[in-house]
Image (cartoon, rainbow, N blue to C red; front, side):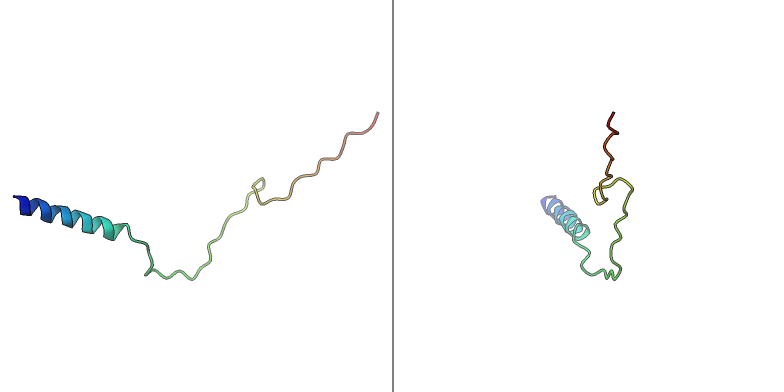
Amino acid sequence: MKKLFLLGTFALLATTLFSCTTDEYETNTKKAVVPTYADGPGDDPIKVPPPQPK
């Protein structure tokens, strides 16, 4: 019973390590496209004109 438990533990550990590894064998030649939004952090600030003097 103890050997069966150890075998199951190692099998679970092996599958967990295999599924959590990085995708180093996957080839991706496309560059990631970061979408830009109208009011995001990479936009130019809007310059508001000063109010008219009275």
